[in-house]
Length: 208
Image (cartoon, rainbow, N blue to C red; front, side, top):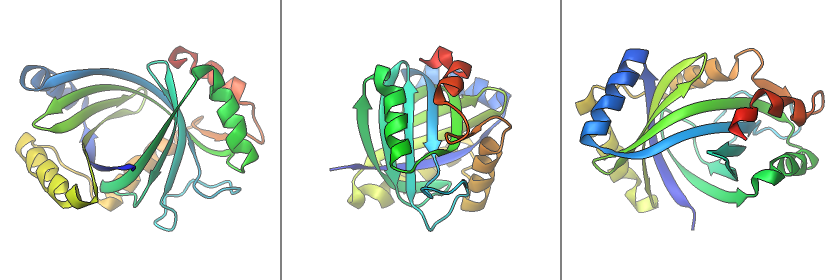
């Protein structure tokens, strides 16, 4: 059965990013650093648009994290604090391009690229991710994986701990603004009908 990922997010300044890293190293458990590159497909198959919409709960991507690749589908409402089903399918990193081609054949060819460096901690039962998007800025993700019955409890727990830490959780409108800011960066949209994935890969080769 797919797990439900309950997640809250918010902006960080560079100073907050640094201070929180120090705080969690002292008061939490460091789970590791993630260097991640993601190819995120438009939920509107066959259309050259990437507008967030409640009409489509599909979040489909192929990503590589610390040299390990996977196909990811998250299903559910997009928001600053959401609960979505998550399906993860590991793939051979050597078959990353093959998976991109597979999805292209199915009609997924347009979307956005994302490259991040994340420091991950466990703090009071919550997975805290401090994320740097090079050239853009910083944000946090606070997550608990649970089942459908545990969503309300998880949301409450994350909200309480974020408030104690002085972290402002984004509402739906501001979360969409964050994603739009990330997605609208020059050079981070892709159209596989007009470009080769091999050329995209060369820009992010360090992640492979």
